[in-house]
Image 1 (cartoon, rainbow, N blue to C red):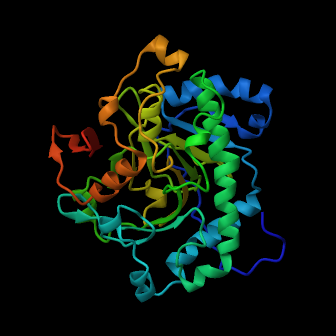
Image 2 (cartoon, rainbow, N blue to C red):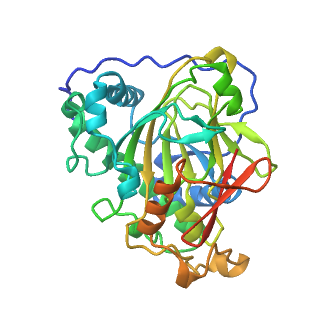
Length: 364
């Protein structure tokens, strides 16, 4: 991590955790420091396997950063939103429709959520090498720290959990690590993201208090740095939406489409959404830090049929192996389509679209 002499950064003060009585999502919490030894990995692997097969989500602690380090990264995460002029943000807007990449800014009201109401989500996306991209002036003093943050997420969180997932399928430990390189061609990135409340109650009613529609993520794993605004929900196997807890200096890790395809449906890319916070956090903005681990661009999203586990339980394919997209094809198709293309409504809850021959569902 960076040395002790660091550039000053305006402090971001997060809202207080909710005191409301809500329906919390209960799923396993692991101590990631145990993954440093073979014995620890053997202990954690079945816990991670069962959590990612049942829920697709996992709470993580002891990831290697102190509370003070995490707090500073949240201070830095607010800089692209609070310290950058609107004109500079426009100049650094991502070419989302043109390139199928989120690099740069995504402005508020870029997506349609429901009933003609557009989103109130702003984010800034940094490709993992960090220095190969133009960044706002206010963020440039912090780029060495952000690069270290990317490396920490990749090598100290993403890779250890990928090893545990491989062990859960009785595959060699490095199976998924080899598909998710830091230096390889691919779109793994840091996302700094800020949710703003809707401007009026009429819009909240039109979207049924949903700020981001139910969806799965694109890649292998998503790492969310826990923050106190209660708004993230996951769809449980019993069909109920439950709130994800805030774990101080903790992480929430979930499976994406790519890992579900690699595992032949064994690991679940769980549906999750963001909704209006509880009453005592109403009106608060929600600042998030994410690390989206996507496979290398040229990797074909087909099941590892040599897995002894999959040979026992069977494989559920989303499409025939010969028709499976590469990670690049799937990422571009999903990025270009989300919030920007027409969906076919199947019932009061589910909407569908077909991308690269794969049926993708959205949950309203």
